[in-house]
Image (cartoon, rainbow, N blue to C red; front, side):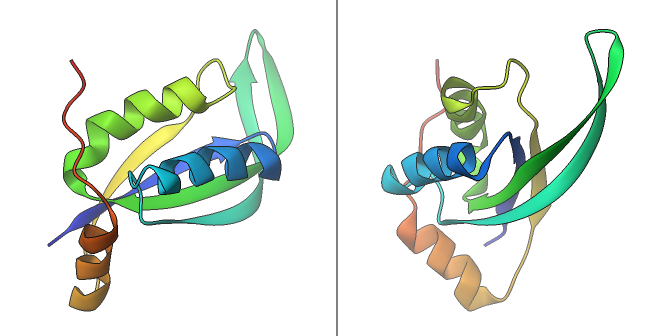
Length: 108
């Protein structure tokens, strides 16, 4: 019963909490881990360096399209980082993810 982990960057812990709380409450994700990072990137013709928060959220693989759409709607960045990883874990953890999340149809 594999699942997905989705890597998302945020401008602050508040922004990360707002997004992940919304996704947990609607049962689109089972949980989220949050980590502080330092990012370097090219944006609007220059190199930028910023402190950010990364969330790694876990959900059913079938929720990928819904998550991309919903994260884009909720995220304050013009171009949010939304990266999917297909993962496997111990059976009890995989079962828990499927028990606490709802399947979301592919948005039309």
